Amino acid sequence: MDLKFENSFAQLPSYFYSRTQATAVKDPKLIIFNQTLAEQLGVSGDLTNDNNLAQIFSGNLCPTGAEPLATVYAGHQFGGFSPQLGDGRALLLGETVTAKGERFDIQLKGAGPTPYSRNGDGRSALGPVLREYLVSEAMHKLGVETTRALAAVTTGEEVARERLVAGGVITRVAKGFVRVGSFEYFSSQGNQQAVKQLADYEIARHYPQAKNTDNPYVAFLAAVIDKQAKLIAQWMNIGFIHGVMNTDNMAISGETIDYGPCAFMDEFSHKRVYSSIDRNGRYAYSNQPQIGQWNLVRLAETLLPLFANRDKDPEGKVAVGIAEELLNDYQEKYQAYWLSGLRRKLGLRTAQEQDLTLVDNLLNIMEQNNADFTLTFYYLSQLSEEGSAKDEPLQKLFTQPNEINTWLTTWRKRLADESSIDKKRQTSMQSVNPIYIPRNHQIEKAIRLAEDQNDFSAFHSLNSVLQNPFSYQPGKENYMLPPKSDEVVHQTFCGT
Ligand code: AMP
Ligand code: MG
Image (cartoon, rainbow, N blue to C red; front, side, top):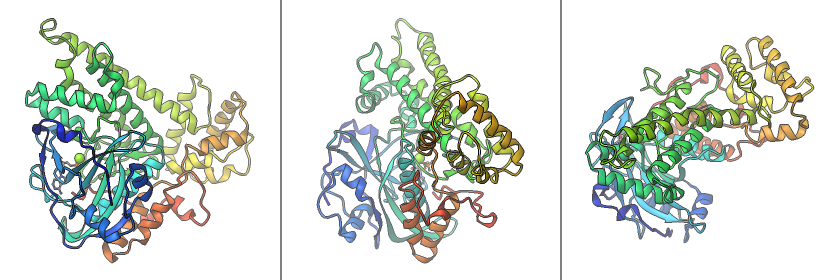
């Protein structure tokens, strides 16, 4: 296997990272290799030798041109500041540039300790590897900005968690892994030069349009804010709960990163939390937009010295004013992305003032009636403007159908203003309302089988269904259904 490396982060001053080698594992075995992604990345050579791929994607064999390093960052974790975190179990092999000129980071997760491992072992358990593979690839197919998964392997070694469990390594691909926490690390150390270098690097890599503006750093923050507003709106529109929105898990590139105890909701609730460590619900579903803003304030704070000339702004008031204005825009941007996403979900092409109420009412009725989030929108996408027997599957999702029936009448009145054709509207709705999402209980089943019996068939079947989340796949009805009462997964774990 041949991957052309073109490493730019390794050219930055050495205080940004530590050069670290992966620690070899006993008996790596390939679980999956993402051929399609490999092709997009321009990977060449023999891609069929599973043993060779397992050696590379476990970290046992360092590919030519890789310059492995672990990056340093800090982060606000559940609101409290940790001055030094860093890639404790992740290792950046390097970057590759595709034929289209897009630059991607290639990173192993679980390949052994680094100088930032603190008390951790630098390893990943197999369960979280499988979860991240399934969910990140599903997110991509759902149209959400995310890191991708290139490969997953078992290590042939056990890792100590609550008990001994099988170990694994996942290879992740991202437009960029620099985080809000990366800026916080240097800012908290008073290393303003490093903050500027990092900002320049990120501008060149992700936001080159910011460069030719009056103040590139202001334009940079504005662009990051816009990206995050859009990303979190997308999460909300598909019922995704990240679970650990610490500032070290928010990428400057605007991609969803660090899939830990994340989950998609089954029954809708504004307050839904799955993560076992999120005891106060800080990262509950409906808190996500606000937390996004909180994290962006932390980023803005690190950039303030770059916003205005200190001689002219000795107290930093001008800089703070600029930042506040941008951060205030976040709410409006988020709301606009979110609402336009929901209009598409409801088949509305035009915008009317009362659409917000229509959406809010639907969500509230869903919550009060324990309706499944994904199926509600999917069944809605089947309905005609007239109303028919087809309403039944939707009604059945609600404990009390009266309220949803009243809502449907209002929705249909609203549709009448659109003069859309049923078929066209349904097709458009079905292109944004998935049938298949990586449901928690299905992921759990796949993990259990893999962990307990070294059987990856459930993982592969689920992964295969998730490749086409918007198309009905005959015989795969099981994957669209919510969990039965004894299958419900109430909590998810980081597994770190
Ligand atoms: P997370 O919130 O899961 O992304 O991780 C928070 C921090 O803990 C990061 O700095 C990780 O690198 C580190 N970490 C998590 N798990 C491990 C592990 N098994 N070994 C070393 N460091 C870890
Ligand atoms: Mg993290």
